[in-house]
Length: 155
Image (tube, rainbow, N blue to C red; front, side):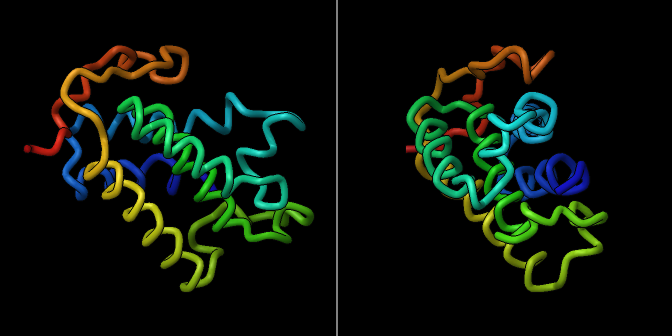
């Protein structure tokens, strides 16, 4: 998918799920950074369902919850969004426009939104609190090391 999904929609969905402005920005930035960071053949597993993007998404989500890591959450969202958005065959035939929201059918768009929102909600319910911090400074820029206690559930 493109910036519209990986950054704009992800940030909006995070805000609507109750994340703070800072945390929503960190999640969306980490999500969008996957396309710059995970390139080449080795990086394809972050984008291709056929190479295990769904498994990687589940693993990164587990790490995100365990550590309260918004970078891992952004990467988990990215891999799931690409696996759903491209579909299985879209990775073998990456046709022009496959990454555009408006070129995907309503069922695919609904699955992308539903699964993204579900992952954000699940993180909010499961994440450790209150002193977790972003772990990967390279992909967050100014958000690296930002305390993520703003989004913690209240006991």
